[in-house]
Image (cartoon, rainbow, N blue to C red; front, side, top):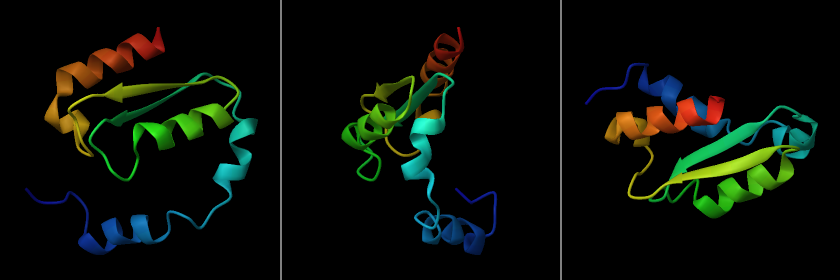
Length: 88
């Protein structure tokens, strides 16, 4: 497997992940939002995703048991189905 972007760009994404004030402004997001994540992802656990959803005006969580960080690549049909359901 190879990254679609340069490794330096991928690293910069993680290095800058906390350099914004989005967390304190989540309550300003008024559209419905589904915070989705794999149940096996240690960095964005279902509990962390619930914290994000709780800060949103209309947030909900979708947890994909058995999937990790690359959930959409691990089970594309299941994730795509959930996206379609969330958009309905």
